[in-house]
Amino acid sequence: MQSSYERPVSGAVSAPETAYYLVFKLDNQNYAIAMEGVERVVRAFAPAPLPKGPASVSGLLNLHGRVIPLLNIRHIFGLPEKELAPQDYFIIAGGTQGPCAIPADLVPGLTGCRPDELMASDAAIQGKYVERVIKTREGLILIFDPRRLPPGEEMNGGEIHGGPR
Image (cartoon, rainbow, N blue to C red):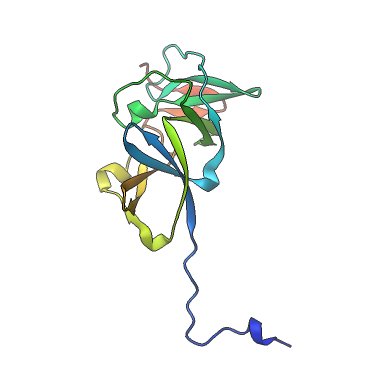
């Protein structure tokens, strides 16, 4: 027997599910990454250099015995290079072939939004690394998908393939 609280209410519409994103800053621009792809956030530390590696990778990190590529997010987004500082962060997230690290100047926290609050990005941007945009009172937050690496450069089981920097 079905109880009264299990019966659907006539005309009721289910609320859209809220998606959560980890917001991070590079210079004065806000970016975000889907929370389901985030493993953890750690303080930045010096990466091992990667001679003749692809321009999209700054180096390699040893994170508790795992070798993780550090994405050169500034190069990927066409931003000016900046030295890592002790107050910077690394976001450890799922990439194309495994975890990768994304450097950030600041990680202010989480934001949630409903599907109707997400805007499609410009086609030129969308084909690259930004799938959608969140519009807030403070401005736009570009949603970065680390699984979208630059064409011809891919991480494969700890080996990094691509053209030289």
